Image (cartoon, rainbow, N blue to C red):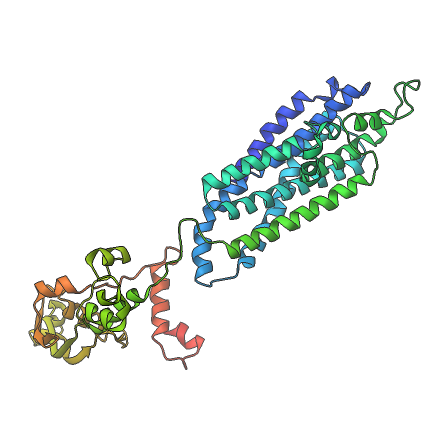
Length: 447
């Protein structure tokens, strides 16, 4: 995305260089100065629109952020602060590309100090716009909603920025928008920086006005002529940058994803969850604990429609599984017979017994190769070969695989080999894990 933005800036910079070429630009009248002001406004608007991509990128990241935030992976500021800081060097790079292509080609004041002041304002407007669109993304939380907010914000900033409509021409009931517009402060600062420079200090017509040409241009567009307005604009942009990034973090912390309301668990649903764990009769439990719902007290009956409205939480009878003297063996591999082993079968499980109780999470533990997965495969009926002996009962009844497959679920483990390491490295690492903790590093390397 950042590379695309750079290409876009290069294309727009090339267009600006040819449209406002210095050989065609003059400093003879106020109208000439307004053309220069238009070139400066184009630079500000370019970085304003260039930051619009921040809105789409922020929206795309929000689902993962909300999931990790709700799981307490990190606070909102730990996400919002790096997002802001990582954008700063990108803004410096993008603005450097633009100003190096356009500043001297257009013919702005050649003073090096004013060059870097111009550059600073472009960086600040880029940072301000990025923060603004991140705030709108966190507030909208949906691409359509946030895109609407962003388009409206751009419209307001452009209209009340002080260039399209001069300050003196803005209606009194809209002037508050002029003073609230970050683009206004940037436009005033960048205009003051340019038109109070040495290139604009000539007096065109002493009989008409003793003001320099630069001051006349500023007054014609309602721009303040006080040189302190450059630093006022810088301070205002810094304030907006801080404000937008703080609001971004606040919205991330307070707002939830759209369309994901928090469920309210009713007493009936809690009862149903209790029934699912204990196997008690749901209707008797609900009627016994909530007499207000009985018809005699004016309450309603518990119907299938009520259950469907609350969800399909159906009661079931918890079952247990017991196994006794489980033995599992396979035919002896030919390779082992060639080594002198005379037995016909290789026994993998030898007389294993145990039980799994309902509502109790049981951990089956053992060293590698002990037979944990083999035992689970036997109990689940996943072993299609070999010889199985012993008793497996479901709540006291002999296990029937066709019935058991309808009431039980089984997840099988799978090893994932990392693509960043070789097979040899994986084998060595696995072997190291099987060594005793008292084995030092040198001995591990030798082994």
